[in-house]
Length: 260
Image (cartoon, rainbow, N blue to C red; front, side, top):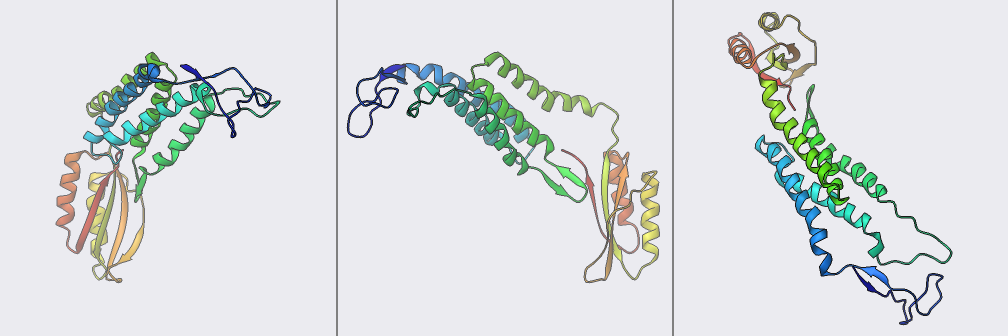
């Protein structure tokens, strides 16, 4: 950093007590500081890109560019917080300013919650987007670590985050699965036998049927019911769909597996 003077209107410099006159020059940034400032930002771009690539590959709402921008913005703000000696302001006479960069971290992690809320949505009884919201939150934390100069901790967090999102997902595919399915079935109102037939089909695939919404649709001409099923694999879901299509009186259905 180079030394410059801060000037009040009128051209006279002021001292620490607010008196006009000469005062020690304050530190400022110049091009010689660029490498030290750019390295955390470039590292944040790489880390955000690695995490965002996994989300983009899976077609999530917040993907490659979103994670990069979150990580970059967090690193940029944290760098500004730890460089308060170069800020262009003066303390009021008789006051003392204590630098606390952690307040910037608190603000970033609080603000990122609004962005995370935008990727969480509900479809019936299913909640989607929780994993993507968590990835945005930890991406912001990693950006703050890079901005604070904690490169080893930030790099470790990046590797662990990518491992949790990608590698542990592969491991989970080899574990015993007990998928939860939300099944919405619609049948004609004037066919009273259809409801018993639908329940019989569903009970054949799931030992217990969780009750859900009952609704008249299509201007009162049809009945819609929502069931919650457990323990169905992907092959079972395909067979269930075929059985529902064969039920007399059924006019529509929707099978919604719960996922992140």
